[in-house]
Image (cartoon, rainbow, N blue to C red):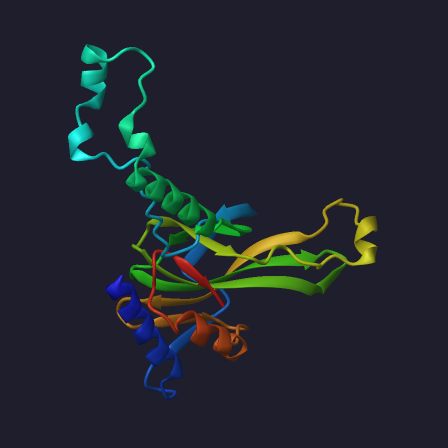
Length: 232
């Protein structure tokens, strides 16, 4: 994880560097090709939360052989002495409190894109977005943008997974109801920027980093955890 955080810091430096120090190649198409994409409703456990539920019924040393002794010396139906101890009741109370306080799964949306690196360089950081477009009004679109610390080797494919609370959104106009295709909206996944391990950068010609600057600073403002991507 330290390596991912270091790479993101390098990315920040490259983006804010003076023009000419870190040349950015711009064009319409990227060497990172989108092969498949989809979205779905999804729940995700809270990050960096460890639930440590204590077992119920702390066994006292004097009672370790209770089960064996019960079978040998006691009649059926004898009560386990651990059940009534102060330690047992305290452990059960602690467990109930911890279970009540345990963070619940977060309901949201998962976005996936399968890409292939058709260049001879190793991709290290990928900026991409999932678009929902109103067929009757293409200018009306919802964009879910992500920053992903993911390594894609030359001529290899990789599935990139992102999570956000935002779904398709209200991108459908009233006129969409008459759309012959019957689809509520069109979908597509777009690669906006790729940073390679050799320091070179590719960026989509009509994509403007300034539009996501605040989101970028927020996404890189904390050490990277287990996630593959962060929302911009």
